Length: 272
Image (cartoon, one colour):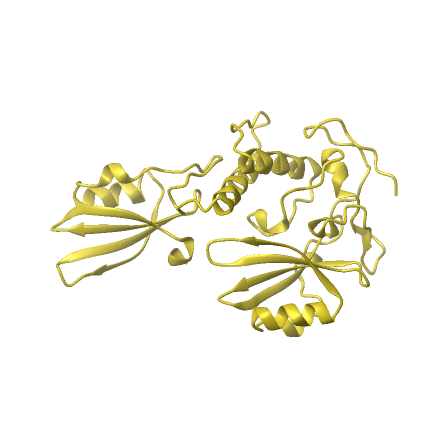
């Protein structure tokens, strides 16, 4: 299949591809040949995938999990494996271009193309973001939204200014994902490393020294946090955990004598 490249990231070709035209649910299903590996230890799962003809493509680490992408040349199939606490927690089919096969045509039982030539979305460039960089774990089925997400992801990943000239939610989401990936790649401290997009990072250190009730009102009101749990300590202090979904911030507020003593950033898994 011949793909006509476009001139820039912001320009989309006409009907050059059928991008995830079939049901997106098909991509979320666990392929039958690897279904038995869900729940196995990571080292055992890797050996099994290799023995079954899969080749490891890439691995991307998050706060509490890792995503790895594997390609079966015989099946012409890309899968994404989520590893948590040393075990395979889920395995799902992914578009071929998540495994670097941009021109691989994958068809379902009705003959409709699921993903063909995804590089045409953004010209000759390969999509740098993967399925898991979307909030719902799936690439957009709208070409313009996917291109906006990709441009935002690249801007965030490479430290470029936030430039959402289309006022697109997809760009904002991509930018946040790119910033988060850059933070992981450079081992920045989680939480206070910064976020991008409409749900940008919210500062909270100014609440230190205020009363507990005032800080709670500020966090759950104007600043968009949700209280998760609160417990007392032996020294009459209290620890309260807050989560802000928009910026993916997880914080612990330590109060003593009714006043905020310290606010610490925590990994997201502590707010799940």
